[in-house]
Image (cartoon, rainbow, N blue to C red; front, side, top):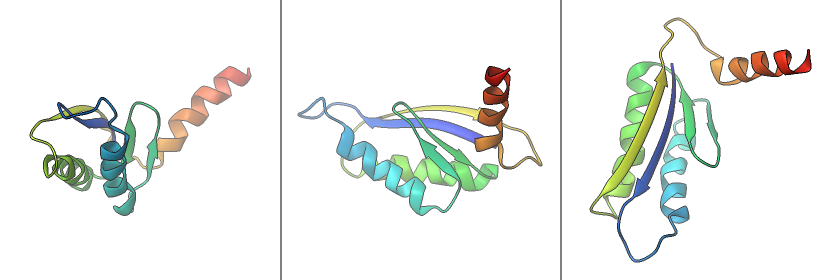
Amino acid sequence: MLVAFSVSPMGGDSDSVGAAVAAAVRVVRESGLPNETTSMFTTVEGEWDEVMAVVKRATDVLLEQFPRVSLVLKADIRPARSGQLRAKVETVERYLAE
């Protein structure tokens, strides 16, 4: 299962959310699950329960500091598949190389 998510505080004194987002990404990286962070989303790969637990922990980290948090989540659920974090991109790159 791949889950791409974005978690960000809402409100506050500044429009800069970099430090808060870094705290959430730290949770993902410390999980040990395969992951990748881009400018808009962090993608995590694993089984349903373990991935959703990481998303919850990353969200909770922000809720400790902010009264309101936005969470956007997209999932690709393919049981018995792994390595899709890289494989999907490799497939597209193969087509682009043709």
